[in-house]
Image (cartoon, rainbow, N blue to C red):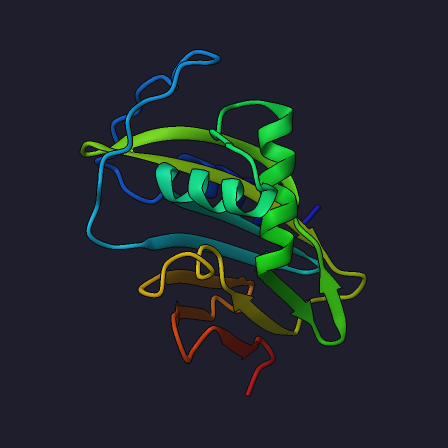
Length: 185
């Protein structure tokens, strides 16, 4: 195992804002009313080392409910269940492409949960990707929720180890795809 992966998984799992207030998710069958918000955004942090990439992504829970309902053509309410997690994993792997050179890497779900930021219910996922060879170049296409919201913005922060190269991707209309190189220039 690479020396950075353990601490990176912990960093990604802990979140990206120290001001996060965690509240329990509703009980099975109980749904909270959607709180309207003026913008549509997802935020992801990606750490890459060797043949492995780890992504922690979070988004507004009501937006995710709408996207999965649209995709599945039936009412979906995201919760902490294997069924909900598998629906998200399939949706994620359709809407997000990570390609290391010519190899497309599918994400495997490691964890998920709800958190409340301010008054906004959010849902986060932790996904792991593995390539057959060291990831030296990476293509990212991140279109989550874009099929529903024309103002959707997907922010992806990428950090590569051991080079410590960082990239901030702003995925929005006319700029859904990015290519990065982690080779020394």
